[in-house]
Amino acid sequence: MDGAEPDREDDLIARARLRDDAALSRLMEAHKDRLLESIRAELGERVRLRLESQDVMQQVYLDALASIDQFVERGDDAFFRWLRRIAVNRICDAGRRAFQTEKRGKEVRAADVPLDASIEHLFDELAGSLTSPSGAADRADRIRLLRGALDQLGEDQHEVIRLRYLCQLSVPETAAKMDRSERAIRSLCVRALIRLREILGDAL
Image (tube, rainbow, N blue to C red; front, side, top):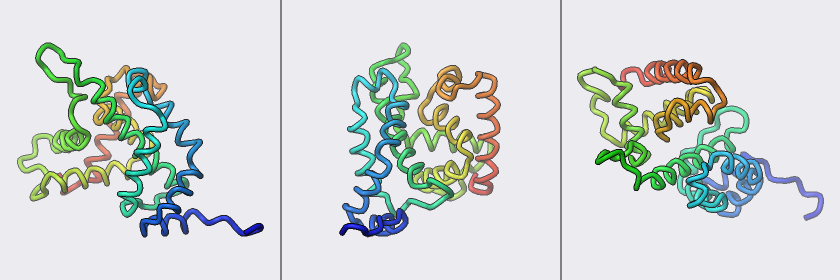
């Protein structure tokens, strides 16, 4: 109807939680241009040969529909940041597949490891030499706990952990991605790991 007010984003999110495809489609459309720009910036040359930006967008839509109940409002622009996080996780997965044929001798690159396995490895590294990492938590709980902790990091700290530990980029590659010096990346990474240990606390 002419003159009708556009739906508020929180109303669309509430409808999307009820598996309203049309509501989620409108949310995706509202963020489409920014999300595509972000995806194109994240796709490296190797991955771009195998994956189109629109393919990532389609997968983000499916993932968002399946996991909309997990979305938590955290500050301004939270829904776009959530969609972007889904997109970059998918790009990381594609990057790992792109590297699957590259070996160092007989050693499989760490980038071949699935995302959840990368998250669990990071959890183990955070636990360090503790005798009973994660207490009674099983693998799914460990992954869930660390995903939640990652979401509580500041944007820069989250990004450096994502690139270094989940996407398995080197310090120079991470520095180039974040437009920072290698020294700054190492320092940021240490602070992020310390912050993760603080957030996880007894879970380690």
